Amino acid sequence: MSKHHRCLPLFAAVNLLLILQPSAIGLPPTTTPITRFQNYLRINTAHPNPDYNTAVEYLTSFARTIPTLLIQTLYFTTPDKPLLLLTWPGSNPSLPSVLLNSHLDSVPAESSKWLHDPFEAHLSPDGKIYARGAQDDKCIGMQYLEAIKELEINFHYSPTRTVHICYVPEEEVGGFDGMARFVESEEFKKLKVGFVLDEGQASTTEEFRTFYADRSPWHVVIKATGVPGHGSRMYDNSAMENMMKSIEVITKFRENQFDLVKAGLADPSEVISVNPVFLKAGIPSPTGFVMNMQPSEVEAGFDIRQPPTADPDLMRKKIAEEWAPEWRNMTCEITEKGTLKDFMGRPLMTATNDSNPWWSIFKQAVEAAGGKLAKPEILTSTTDARFMRRMGIPTFGFSPMKNTPILLHDHNEHLKDSVYLEGIQNRAQLKHRSAHFQRSNKDSSLLCAKFSSLLWTCTWLYQNFLPNSNQLL
Ligand SMILES: *[C@@H]1O[C@H](CO)[C@@H](O)[C@H](O)[C@H]1NC(C)=O
Ligand SMILES: *[C@@H]1O[C@H](CO)[C@@H](O)[C@H](O)[C@H]1NC(C)=O
Ligand SMILES: [Zn+2]
Image (cartoon, rainbow, N blue to C red; front, side, top):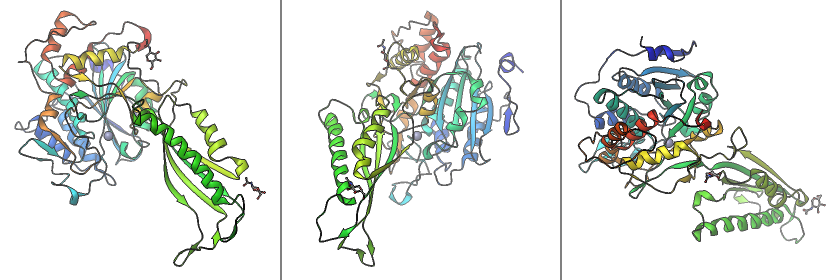
């Protein structure tokens, strides 16, 4: 056992399998980064029956080809929902670690609407790999490992800071039996995570996209009650009339938010979106609805998404006072599917300016690899990143895919081989870049210039990034 191994906490748990790795059960020598990616994509981890165990076995066999990686499989619920945690031990375990996260599962795919079987990982003559999960997010899961393998095997590099790579189940169904459990666990606490890179999305331009926050979903159901009456009678305060008044108010609010987007003053993910999702009213008859009867109850449901800059108290007040006022005989039910604040009461977002040293390092890494970053964005939906941000851990969503159509959850999800390789390929032959790193010495900037591909540079820089302030501890 090496010194590194002893420095790491050993986890004692019945449900935990700890395998220390010097063994080299190699994959066939003919595999390439592309065939290894295809093989991962061929494991069907789509809901509703994701085959997590085969995926974990596959990743484990690849991880075994990287001699210093520690491999653990954790179970927080049932044996069919494993979480794979790999650790690349750093020489200074007292430093906060870096966590590279991806999820094992994917959304379902309707095979009949695809050009190629979604679990065949077909490589077209123009280099497109068609598979469910190609973009979301098996690409990053394999790229992390490929990058680390290159660094360790071809460059005999060992990190200063410990790096953990984790593969979580259940992200696509809310993360409740996956990342949500993991962040609450003793195992997670022991990792002393200082920074996380999680999944992002493809960019259709030359610029890479970074996500620093998710929007938080609320499900709101409002209900109106009133005196029922004959369909011929005009009277005040029927349930339907009261509901329509509310819908007018909500429509106005939605319009105001949407106008900000249309005027170019805000991105769609920076405003509060409100969309009606159901209306329930009327008295059923064998042929449809009773037409001469005004009902005594009406219900309407709304999907609301708020950016972390929104004030949840203000929103609750608005809903109670304007959307479903008691005096109008209305009630509301708000199901907050996510919070807007972290455990300290701070907005659930990661700073993207110099106040956050992890951001500066990230930006340097992307630029050193010859990449450009678009203006950081709030994700319109949600990912597991919210669980880490809630713990106050800086987290960016980043999947290095540029000039790529956004196809997550879509038919014919695919990724070009060249785009995939750009994240990991050895570009040592490239001319020395004049990248300058504030926090690294001459040797390291030289090395970085060699590792001009993205995830290498990111991984390498984070491993070597020595904190110069308490912010990171
Ligand atoms: C609310 O319900 C009460 C009792 O049925 C009724 O008297 C009153 O007019 C209703 N108010 C409104 C605004 O609907
Ligand atoms: C950095 O960004 C955070 C979060 O958006 C903000 O609160 C803070 O004032 C900014 N700091 C600087 C130095 O610009
Ligand atoms: Zn995803």
